[in-house]
Length: 343
Figure 1 (cartoon, rainbow, N blue to C red):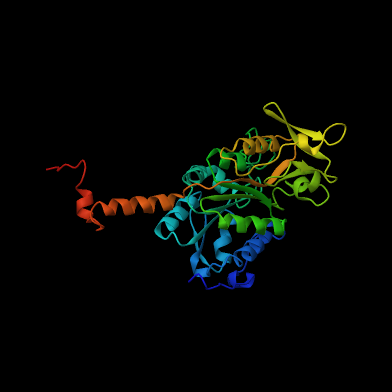
Figure 2: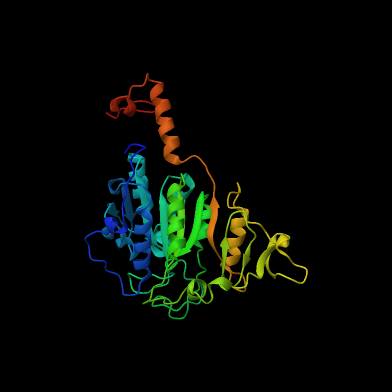
């Protein structure tokens, strides 16, 4: 495709001929629709898109996308996607998985993809439960939840996907929800435009095994009071009446009400482009602790750093230049360095 060519797609162009099979009312339906709508506007040809998944309900995604796809094994989707991207860096590579798939058996692959800053977009669907295997608690479920594998209540502390991504050094970190169509699509487009690993946690409802897990945060009546939209360069304000905000108290964050001597100038102004993710980590940690602190959503971090495949390609080019631009033979590579012969 030349710079002048424009790829014109509609959502239906990205709908495959496969019957979509999720439980009626599952949040995956909404996510699928919004992802297809967003990808149709990216000016990327279908043959240049690849969707890679692991195991779980969300992992059926590649079947329903009229693009190239790879339904891999449990937890290994970031590793497979890394191989795809390294083999052809021109491809737009998307990784899809649930909280069980990516935060448990796939946790190791996830954190290393994030720290390497490979140009992938990773979509983690978080319903805080194992859905495909019928309702066991997952790494994001949290203490007290009663499931088939924790009938007396789980005693495991919960993993927070945002804290994990920030701690791994991800250069693009965001949070949205299955029912926030415009918000989700906007974040998808911003993730695609980012050069490096983009990580988006999508809060998703499992109507069968964990219905209403995010009702307070996602519901229209309570969303304004229970979530805090992170907007770069703007003060941290929330509430249906926009009358509450987040203020620093030493090294701690606190919720305050505007008025009675407290104004917007007393509130923290968010910086998603900060070199270090300290403020993002504080907000994420406070937001998953319950109490009166709202759940942060939106853009936690977006910074530019060299992507892995760019650095690797530069290294390969430099190595080839040492031999006059010629690729060395496989035999010469095998027999250089420490080698020995066994008789």
